Image 1 (cartoon, rainbow, N blue to C red):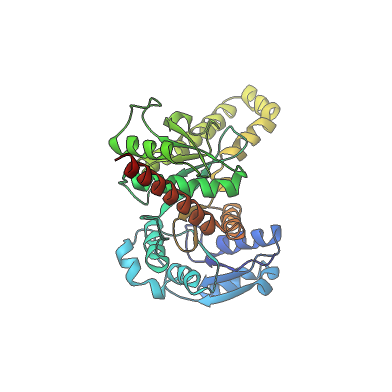
Image 2: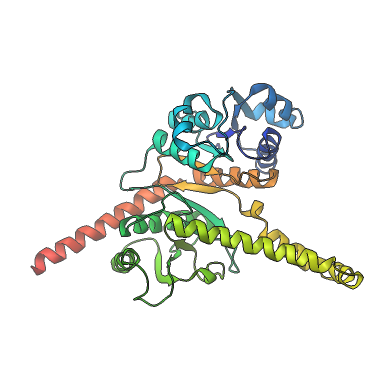
Length: 352
């Protein structure tokens, strides 16, 4: 199958052009159908491509000298969208020159540019940032929103649930992903008015391609008991940073323990297969690629510190969403939700 090419913001991220091009090249080696629009300084991109000659026939370079810094305010970045690598990568999706965009740059700027250029889908009030997190289950768990919207009402949360479930069906293959709302307890009476209202709407809805399982607490996110965790961007970002911090704490604790003495070093050699598996499972590069859901186009945010493996995984996420037509899945789910509301309104009218 021939895929639309993927626009890569070659200048974004902490690790520079070499890492972005190496990541795209790794993705290309894994799947030779990938084609790229590499956006950024042409001379630096060509230098990076010298190490990956197989990329030349699969890539076009769009020269651009402007770069969005990690500290730049989104409002200022928006004004420079037509002259920066990030802005031009997103615009390529708008014009159809690319099917998706991947950037490891400033998250706020990328969201602002994506919203302005691509707009939200009909029936979606706000886009949400969703990412894959490791779990003890058979599949990763999708969590959203992770920072795009600090305050959300019940309507937003229901829309996030639909979008997350559509993404989960692509990733997990489940026809009805298990969806839960992040809360301070699992009891039905716990939580804010917005959470209570969103839960009621999801319980009442019929015909949706998801299974709403109520609430989930933060310590259960990675246990494998659900496929999609829905929350507002404020709580979601805090929970994500806590999970990432705990993962780093565990790996650093193990490293310190295994180097504390000769006996510990011998123990490390014996247990190395298990610790390597743990390290691989907790490595954020192996789960890289957050998605802005709810836009009229696919935009994927890579970790700023991602290595080539992480960038390759972000590219693979973008390609998979294109292959499985995520936007069409969300559109169909929104139609089912509207049908549920119409039936509910009709039943209330008859009762009156």
